[in-house]
Image (cartoon, rainbow, N blue to C red; front, side):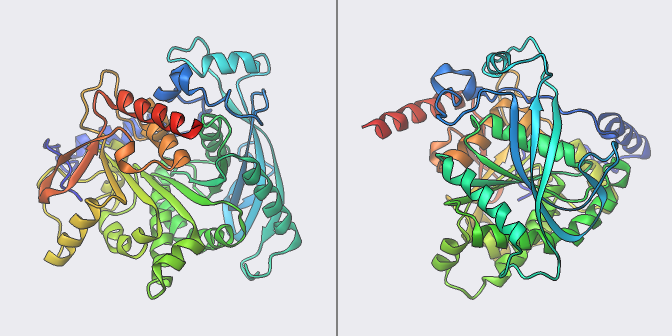
Amino acid sequence: MRNLLMQTIPSFRAGPTRSRLLLFSLLLLTGCQHAVTLMPTPEVLRDERFDVFTHNPNLEKTNKVNVFYATNRLPSDKPSEPGYAKSFDHTLRFGEATLQLGSDEQNWEQLYAESTTAERKDTFEISLIQHREIGSLKESDSPERLPEDVKDFIAELNEAIDQSPLKTLTIYVHGANSNFYRATAQGAQYRYFTGQHAVVLVFAWPSAENILKYTTDVKNTKQTVPDFIRLLKIMTKYSSAKRINIIAYSAGGRLTGDALGQIGAQHENKNVGRARKALRFGHLYLTSSDEPLYEFIDYLPGYIHLFEGITVTADPKDGVLGFAKLTDGQIRLGRPPKEGGELDLTAEQQTWLTNAINSKAFTLINLQVNTIPGFEFTHGAWYENPWVSTDVIATLNLGLRLEQRGLAVYKGHFDRDVWYFPPDYLQKLKAFLLERKKATAR
């Protein structure tokens, strides 16, 4: 897996000065909770032929967006902790959050015009207007017998899924240094750019909301794993979704990988077909994942067969994950070593890993390899880079297979398939989508 890249990268252990500079830069960038502004318009949505808003018959022309949420955070009444606090227990709290894209002076017509073009005149700040807790499930409560208020939440969630033409549920698991507001805001902008077709459930795990407390976030993800497993079991048992997708970002990938590893172990001796039918997992998108690479390799065999597809985006120059590696020395999934480096794996593990990476069920995307003008890598590329966000939305919401996504491939170390965004990515993707549209209309 670390065999991605063709360029040598400088070591973060080169000296204390480099490490201090990196840490200082990270503190400037992510040390406090800034307001979330609407992400750049995904590239494909800048083409009027793919206007997802006009094709939503249930679209309400408003700058308000609703997302569902689940959290094990404790409720908060402090302005500095909007919605839910940093402290937590093991009670799952379910509800719905309403977010506004832009100010009261910026109406739907302005939002629509500015969010379907590449160049915007205005900035649309996202604000959390309200949240409504509907139900809660205590740690001692059995998912087999839900309390009435949780049943009410499931009923509202299923109503939204049934009204959506996609009939899917997308669970978003946020990264470190994130409060409840930021987590729901990121989920809301994803929902918005699906034309509000996608039903989004944000899992707001208890981040310490401070980059200096990253190790606390790591500890909190470990403690939260049982709660996330309970959430997944509830969604697979009670939701009406035909497919359940997961977007796991940064430290959210650490939490998700650990939970899926345990779920995979629980289904180890079960019939694969029946397990997939029961779980209904669609696509897992691990973007800039903070999960330790060896842990990922250990867990992947237990759950890869439970998903229709798994995508991993990686870049060896990811400075945020470079900082994370400084804390414990572990290689991260989203920041693999240089091309040709060796991992401490057995020959059997190497062979299995190669076969998994080269399978149609797995997509390893190298975000460093591209020759596209304006294609810039950021740790938050899944929403900040218009090419990557296009792939996330198209893959999850349309259920595209690997060969339909417009990506290109090269052979990396160990003859492993590594995918990237080629210059003709948009042309290839659009051509497929237009043919798909014609075929559907026949």
